[in-house]
Amino acid sequence: QVQLVESGGGLVQPGGSLRLSCAASGFTFEDYAIGWFRQAPGKEREGVSSIGHDGRGTWYSASVKGRFTISRDNAKNTVLLQMNSLKPEDTAVYFCAAANRAFGYRPSDFTNWGQGTQVTVSS
Image (cartoon, rainbow, N blue to C red; front, side):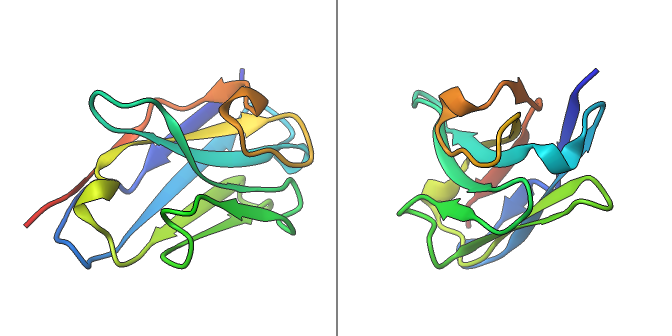
């Protein structure tokens, strides 16, 4: 079955960096767009970044553009999210999700979700 497993979260000081990883299995990875989403306590889930099935198209939310970079390795069934210059407002549970389409960025585009990894930005 489709499985998505996030890793790489943790506690980091403001201005620091983290790299999240999403490991996928159970489906034809290169056919799927992959997205990263986050949800902070008391807030709705929001899109952070997404990447097309072939890695050519990317999307970033305005709040992370210029600080985060998404990439994928279809040979390893993995998507990475490099997060730099982290801010306290980036604190949230981060989820990766898969969409059986060439590209997507809205939560409704994605049908399969991981369990999430906690990112906390605090001094």
